[in-house]
Image 1 (cartoon, one colour):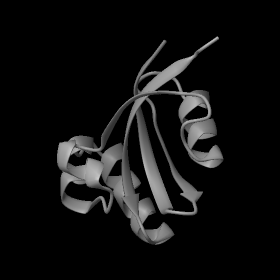
Image 2 (tube, helix red, strand yellow):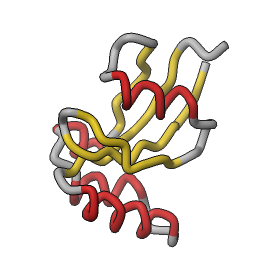
Image 3 (cartoon, helix red, strand yellow):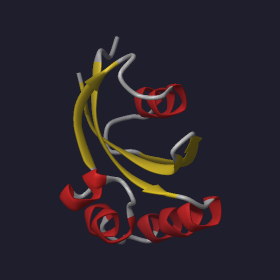
Image 4 (cartoon, helix red, strand yellow):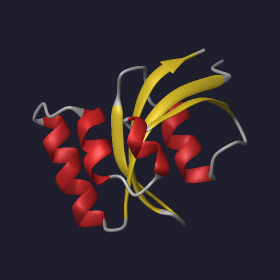
Length: 93
């Protein structure tokens, strides 16, 4: 069972905007660079990297998406009370 995930994310307000960014990522654009340019979260300055976190540390929808995804996967948009997230799972342990 996975106890911790290391993830990065891009947080934006609109679902359509999140879908546009997801499309760019799927076409090969750099996740970290897109996070630096577009994310409204302070983590955007570091490419969206949130570091390691365990269960119960993130809002429910975000946590479920991050823990359900495989290492290296990019998932989203995931809607939370903060907006729409594109999540990249960097590692799992």
